[in-house]
Amino acid sequence: MTAWPRVRGDSILMDIKAQPGAGKTEAGEIKDGRLKVRIAAAPEDGKANAELCRFLAAALGCARSMVRVAAGQKSRLKTVEAPLSCRERAEALAARRDPGATAPPPA
Image 1: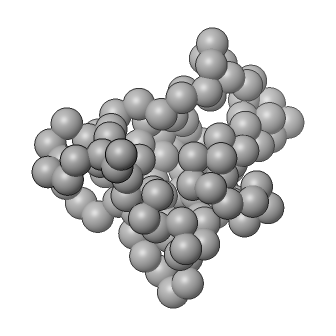
Image 2: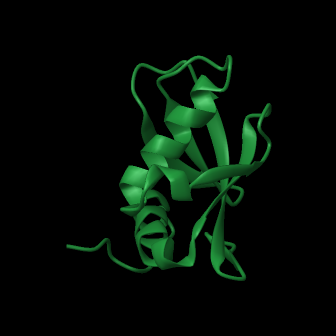
């Protein structure tokens, strides 16, 4: 597996494959270096991007204002940026979702 998330300066970058219009927002598997996230919002007027950032902020334990879509605002393939302090929780999220991961999920 490629590094997920990637580190750039004082931020982490998470490559995401978004699936808007789902019944509920939840993380899926990692495939081709991207975490699949089903999003319970329509892909219109930025609603899906806002829900994605809200979901990731909650999963990473940081403020919503600290998570942003850095690339792919109108694409299903996105890069989301968050503070470097969220790296450990992002790696734990990836470990739970990657069937080839060797690290056990946190207790």
